[in-house]
Image (cartoon, rainbow, N blue to C red; front, side):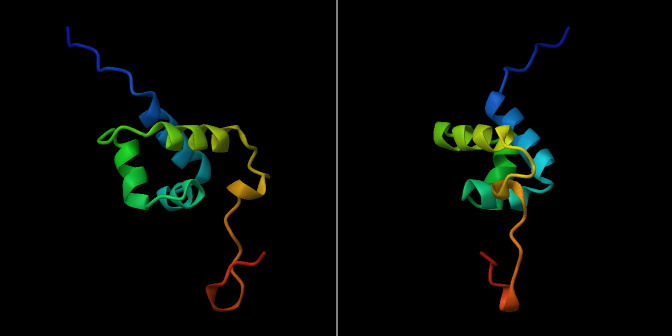
Length: 82
């Protein structure tokens, strides 16, 4: 019988957030961190800091209609439309 891996709730939350938002890049933008770091969190290579985990949980609890979860619309020359 193989030993069970230790639970990693931060990893699971990041995987679910990426799935919900549709990409590592969108998750990174909403969390305010680099996409490579989100990927390392989702792969379980790096422990998710508490402040990032709490922000991710906040984003998970929001509905897709919430502006924070919608991709930003780009205006002329790639500028975000506010």
